[in-house]
Length: 227
Image (cartoon, rainbow, N blue to C red):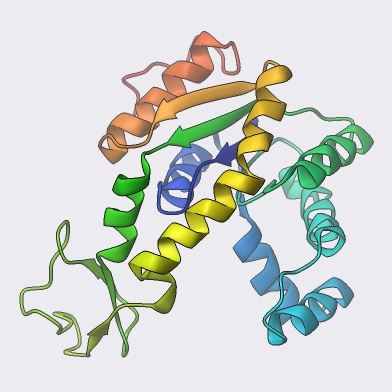
């Protein structure tokens, strides 16, 4: 099973990637995890990436692609992966095809988890994080027992800068400009699977599995009702 998950920020890609990885017995590979590992191990690509990150700039595609190539070349990924956060643009999508071709593998499907702009803004702008322990809450969906205070450690809850409404809307604008063409790229290749990301987490997971079955990306022995 080799999947990429696409969708706007706040749609739940990381959650679904982790669930699908457990379900199919393949690793959840996220670009965030790759960057953190490369930085902590001070790999050549990691050190190069850090120069851009320290300067507040986007890491160039060639460095990101290099990290993905390194990660997907490891033995533990030979049986498959759930890729989250990559590709973000057409350059990366085409590069992923080249990487997999070199590895003698191919993508089974690209899953697009879809949600409306206002839903995403509501989800992200309502998040609050504890300054002390890092726990995350939501003013509407998972409110703390005491407003502004973490129930776990008593720390102050705050809104991250990238969760502010104006920032969220800008992130969505960038996503539409860069990643929407990737969705069309996979649609043209017959690999695109679209699901409604505004539903309950469990329902989204089951929708993905059902859609993959319908597209023959998973074996029929996988039941929609399995846990």
